[in-house]
Length: 298
Image (cartoon, rainbow, N blue to C red):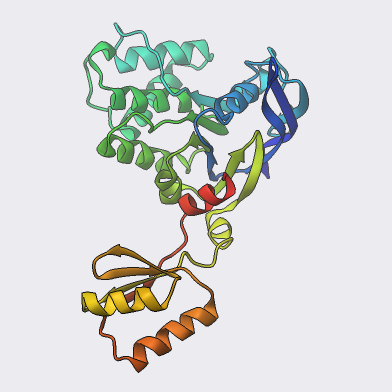
């Protein structure tokens, strides 16, 4: 079952077309990467899903219920973490989650149990300080706890790792991976390595519509390979190969990358064998989401 379905969604800001017939489906209990350049329309799409902005045409469904602008009944299924979450800085984590739980109509016992569980999940279980002293990474973690408090069926995160250092990014990604046991995760990003690390499915947003969507394996299979890396024992031998094959590119003094078809690769192997050129290493360069994304969005 798809927890989120978007059909032919269009949105203009004045004369600027932001979404142009957007079609998207997010399967239940997946970690779904929503990939696009800065300004591609990712945040606009997410605000439309939340009913916070009015779109021009098309339809959005969350768990089969239609989303309407300004009428947020479907938001009971959704937890949301904006790119820059804001908090009441004078509260502690427990006080803040208690406030949010009361607003959601949760019972006191459920708020207490759920708060303890989630603060442990995001690594803030022992944190007693007030939020005003929190780092950016700590605020992102608290934001995830708040978004998961009411047990949503869909957790939406808008570029949750974009402003974090490598250690902070790893912490947030690990939390989102753990959250998959409880909900479906949709997060927008332009950091392709984050998607490759934790996502089960992804979609590329380009020119206001989905250019490609599928599982990570399906997306990678769109390109058979990015070539072969060949490390040569002698610089002179590398020079000889470069002169003989225009498909070779030098990346280091002794390292070449082959970009060519299968027949030319066999010609290269025969040339190496015939001229007894010493090879230190040869390996296939596996396709990456980054290379595919750059190809799709040219």
